[in-house]
Image 1 (cartoon, rainbow, N blue to C red):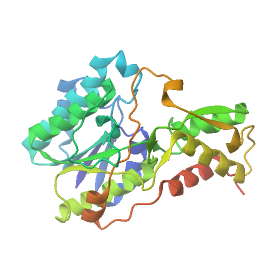
Image 2: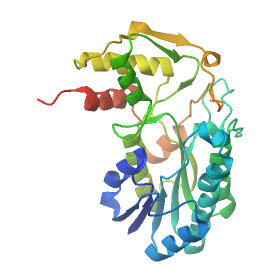
Image 3: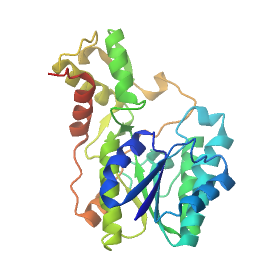
Length: 296
C-alpha cells in the first residue's frame, strides 16, 4: 500500500512518518514538494505518485495572520482540500484529513459532538470548515479528525513558548477562561494509523471524528503544568507556577477570536476503535521531559 503524506515537516506530519510505517510505503512531501497554493501542480503531484491513501497533514495554521490573509488561508485549507477530495473520489481511495475545534463558536456549555452545528468565528475557522465541507460535498471516502491544542517536542507550540518565557521572566499572564484538551501530535499520529487499519477492516466508517486527549484544562492550567514538570526535572527557570497569573480572554486581545470552549467529545472515535484515549497530562509531561530532562 502506498501512502502519500502531505505536510511532512509539521508537528503531526513528523509523527505520522513514524506511525504510518507499519502500514506500507510512505511518500512524505513537504509544502515545497507539494504546493497546496497551486491546484494544478497538486493534481500533477497526485497523478505522479498515484497513492492508495492520501494523508493530508498540511494546513494554513497562522490563526491571527489569516484575518488579513484570507485568500491564502482558504486556498490551502479549502481549495487544496477540494482538489485532494476530488482526486480521492475519482480514484476510489481514502483521504485522511485534519480539522479543528475552531469550526465551533465555543459557546456550548458541554463538549462538542460531531453532529453539532459548526459556527466558526475566525477566518481560520471558516477556512477549515470549508475544507470539511469540500470533503463532504465530494462524497469521497474520507476520515476527518477534528483536534485541538496540538503540541510536540518539535515545531512551534504553546509548551515550547512557555518554557522559553519561564527561563526569562519571573511572572506571566496567561488566559484562564478558554478550556480544552491539549493533544500531542504523537497521539494524533498513532490514532490515525489505528483508524486507517480499522477502516480497512470495516471497524470504522467514513466521516468526521473528534480526536483529542481526555480531560480538560485552560491555557493557564497548561502553563502551570508545564512549569511544574520542568522544575521537577531540574530546569533552570525564573518562573514558578504561583507566579503565573490567570487573566480573562478580554485582557489579551488578538486579531482572531478564539473559542472559549474547545472541548470535543471523543466517544464516537473511542467506541469505533475500542480505544481508551489518555489524559492530557500524560503526553504534556512526556514532552516536557523530552525538552527539559538532562541526558544521563
